[in-house]
Amino acid sequence: MCKDYLIETMEMNCPICNENHIVEKRKRITKGLVKKEVVTYEELYYVCPLTDVEENEFVPAKLFDENLLRARDSYRKHKGLLTSEEIKEIRNRYELSQSDFSLLLGWGEVTVTRYESKKIQDETYDNIMRIAANNPIFTLENLDKHKDKFSLDKYIKIRNNILKIMDQLGNSYFKQLEIKHLYTRYQEESVYNGYKHLDLKKLADVIGYFANFIPNLYKVKLMKLLWYVDVLYFKRYGKSMTGLVYKHMPYGALPLGYNEIIYLPTICVNEEVLNRNNENIIYKIKPKETINISNFTLDELNVLETVASKFKDYNTNQIVKYMHSEKAYTDISEFSIIPYDKAQDLKDFK
Image 1: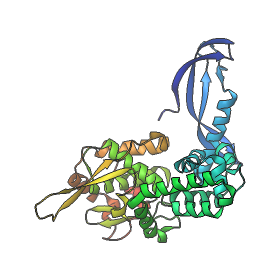
Image 2 (image 1 turned 180 degrees about the vertical axis):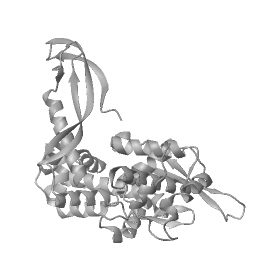
Image 3 (image 1 turned 135 degrees about the vertical axis):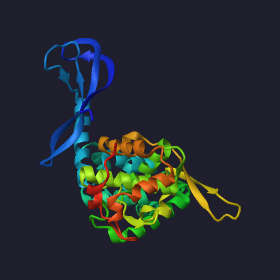
């Protein structure tokens, strides 16, 4: 993986040579100190290509602030907290301003503004925002609870936006509740969930990624791809990507909630009947939206691309047969949970 690469070139006034010319905007992996902890993050900077000395880099004030935010977001990810962009996505989903989101949750008016720009939220505030993101009923109840903080027109507008989200979610929303219920016994990080809480947003993005980039994707194959992504990511980085829990089943590793997972909002499912008696139905997975690649870290993308490249041309039977030869699968008795430490036995990807 390249650790220093060109993003774009642009014309600007260069503070290195005090001339107006084309400069390079570049990105690299670097380390920084946040709350007395060393974090790794992607740093942006400019390079003057006309200056033939080592000190040919510069970082304007606005970019410096952006780099600080990237470092803080790296810390947030390490601590399992929402990033500034994820907080922004939550309020944008409900079409809320920063102050409106704060007031709706019963906080000070500038609280969310600070979280999106510089301050790192504590776990309690983080949990409240996560609930608001995943549970529009909770958000609606909070709006009604703090109704007096809004004008009547704004209250009606926000309420209608929340109701619209509930209508859009429809079946998907209730399927997500079912998935969460299935995972209640796996709330603690352990070897069975890859030391990661179930992340439905990440799961939806991963499924959407495969739906966009793998043709003729069917349900059974998708479930195998998810296992390979999680196990390979665990093998490399010591934790799963999605937090799914997998069982040893006759057709390979299968995540808990496999019937509900296919109703996540990034994909749609078409039922295909294989015979006239409607006895055999297969589920073809299609993308519902284009996945934003920036939703993934570089490490996550590398794993996704590795798995997609390996199994892109495999049909369902081929990937099932391939999985049946995995020691991580064969060493576990049927219908038992497959622990992630079996990732060390994963066959090499070539």
